[in-house]
Structure formats: structure tokens, C-alpha cells
Image (cartoon, rainbow, N blue to C red; front, side, top):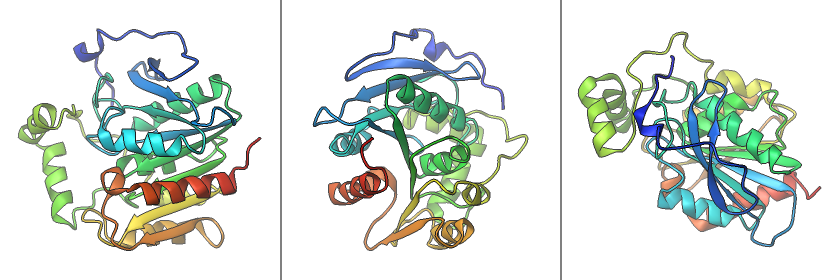
Length: 269
């Protein structure tokens, strides 16, 4: 899917790379302007950067993403950004396809900021994106929270509603004005590689898959399929009791455990 020129992004300009906690605008390889923010590590030290990829209808300004960024800053610097079609970023959402280019721009920015080790943490749609981006990306670790394993899943009521939003003109209007998310109207062509097809290619990069037993969007066969595809020793799987879906349900305790896992797998350089 090609991303058309977006009037929503005309007011944004590409700014110099910031050296401390402030926002900038990144340019993806296909020319979409992406808002991003760098939050230094809370302790002021370390060479680890955690790039956070939000879920569908999220953005770097959403409280749940802000909460995750603050929690993760205890373990390293944090880069947050808004996927295309979300927040103040340009373009239109392709619901997990071209978003890989947005994540790549954020990871590249983290490297340009001077961080020797970069990890990605994705939630829901962002989880599928970090899994698809990871093979060959040179990351220090990858975490996928509440990620789908395969495309076109409609087995739950929330996913049937989401497909209506994405595929119907009326649904896209609801998304644009009600959810503040602009969706590309064209179908995928070609269909991108699915998360479960990408997972076997991530090793030897450490991979953590986190999923809740109360996830209303994707049942447990999704994380189990991802872990199985990773093969023996290819991924660590956490099935969290009482946990719902993605960043909105992730409390500080879970975020802290993810941060602990990252620092245990990625010691300071």
C-alpha cells in the first residue's frame, strides 16, 4: 500500500536530533513523517535504549504509553513514537504492514543518539510489528506483548469490531473522528509476512512473548503458536494471570518485570 501525501503532517517539520527528553519528527524510508520522543534513562547512565511500539489507536501521547515509557526509563533510555496515521504522525495506518518502516526509523534514531544496545517492546499491533521487524535488525532483545500470531483473525467480538472499523468506509470514519486514527482504505497487496512466520527468524536475539489469560482480542493459541514457532530455546513465554490486553492493561508491576528481563538479557555495555 502506498501512503498518500497527508495534509495532517504539513505542519510538522524534521527537526535536529534532540539530545535530551524532547520530541522530534522522523522520516521513514517511504517518506512518512513520524513523531517521536526520546526520554533519557532516569539514572542518567547506561547505553541501552528501549523503543516502545504502541497498539492500534495508540500514540506516544496516550497515558498508557507515557506510563510504560516512565517505567522503562528506570532501565534505560526510552524512545516512543506514533505509528503512521496515529497521533501527529503523517500517513495512514496499514494496521501492521508498513508500520515496520516506522519502527525501523525509531530504532535507527536510537542508534544515532549513541545507544550501543537497542531493544524493542511492542504491544498488540506494535507486538506484531516488532516481531516482523526483528529478523536481521541487529537488536539486543525483543519483547512482544499481546501480539497476534496470524492475520485476519475474527474469532472474538473485539476483533470482529476491529475488522469492521478497518474494512468499511463507515468504520474508517469512526476511526478517524472517534479514535483519532486514519486508516488506509486499500487492502494489503501483497499480504505481509505474518508474526508467526517471522518468529523463527529472530534467533539468536533474545525474545520474550507476554500474553494475558484474560485477553479479549487474541486467545492463548496466539502466544502458544508464536512460542512454538520460535523453537526450543528460541523464546521465553509468559502467560500472565488476570492480564487483559496490551499497554492499557499493563500495570507497573508487569512493566517492571519486563524491564528486569531486558536488563538481565542485555547487561550494560
